[in-house]
Length: 323
Image (cartoon, rainbow, N blue to C red):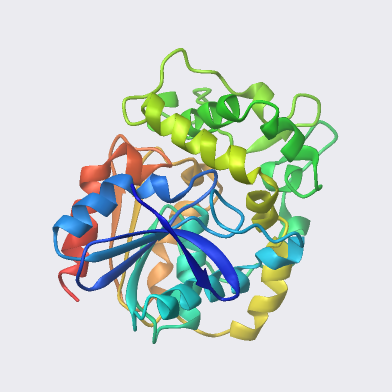
């Protein structure tokens, strides 16, 4: 898909901008790029919407600030507001998956004047943690949660950048429905769980003999080219700001997401393995009063916009059509 560079919020972003009509802003996750929305860009543009899908700062063709602290959720929301300004767009519906959903929730919370509705995929809206996230994450002498593994600058970068294509192939496959049914104790791999201090994150993941049907060799090459250009330092810096986000977001205590919202998640999403996640999803109306529905997508893993593109696109269009 053709992309162009846009200066927004003092940073250069690589942006796909397709179609004409009301604006829909698509925010990707980790380890992805704007290419993750290839199916939705086409479907939404053909349905009469202007679709904007940036590579977030630190990813792909977008600018990569050096300072780790430049990757807080406040910085990223600032980029998205600046992007709307640069494109002369007053307001947009924001759609996120994975990390993009965390950012989308915060954008809708902080700037309902610019983000008039939200479609959240995978990550539910959650209340503040009782303490710094890194104090809550589990670890022992042999293993640590993946987000803790990502904290030390250079450690995960060295593992992931050794063979970028292999890294992406393993991560994308292992979090998908194709990796297994993801029932308790069935051994379905999970890249976003505990990481061996000895083997690293990739050491415990299978390398699929064939790519799943939703991920072509061309798709994998596109992702690999994006991360070969950007490296992993910027994307991993999002995780290195978890404690900073927690501290800064205390200024938003008591706010609720006041815009219309729709939530969906794959039934085999790795996030549902986290203790209490289904209860958090059920409790979302207390934080999102205008939540208009929650959908569990059958036979779908963590990459719903790619694994079940027709279902995701149809539900986005149906929701946006009610606004």
